[in-house]
Image 1: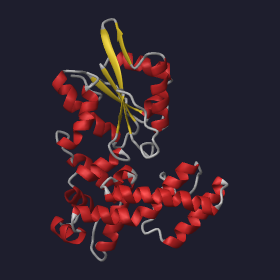
Image 2: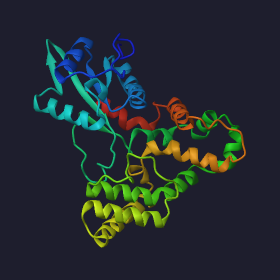
Image 3: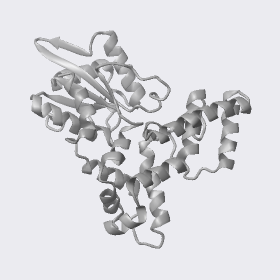
Image 4: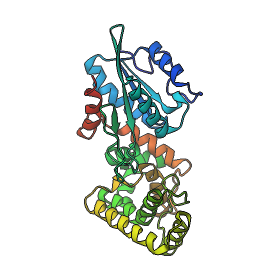
Length: 308
């Protein structure tokens, strides 16, 4: 079987991307049965490549992983544009000269799920949570990964961090105000400093949240009372998600490394630990710890299998 790492090309590299026509020619040269499009290079290519490997090895199917960089960059919006273009020209699943080529897009749910904006297609497989990084923290060997990334004793960490559910409940509670304001900013379509694309402030207190709410209202051109009403509706929905154990549909997984970095700074105060680039090392350690044959990955494997 030929995978992206064996084909001689480097579709996940950071080099300048191709036009659509140039990209399709690149795909024809690689000649995979399954063309897998993912958003980013740091986690997505490895994560979804391992999902595809689990399925395609069993089926004897060739595949290639391409990031949005292959088509000029731009992440999810760029992939959606490619999907729409291929759908319009009947290019999502084709047979040429007896050779089948099918496209599969792996994309983060982001807040599209919360606001009911997900597309329905056999060629799109969304993450189960806000983004792919949520899966790393929910299904990876968390304590072992933190211990490795921080270079600290695992037994000491177990005592300091407490239970896994308790850890995630604490993080959720400390980010609640930030999450609600992020959703409000998206709902109103405003560009404010409190948004999903920035690293959140842990323990965003009520006073700062009130200031941010007023700023968001001003940017949206609505009264603060209207903004408050919409904010409170979103807050109630977030609380429902927390109560139902589904907070990871609106809590961005890319935030977790920075939140655990903050937790360690609080709890390992006075202890010598490797804090430099800890978030990046933690993400890599968790990715390496994942078992892609476990039940949590069934939904991703099914998304690949249904196209084969």
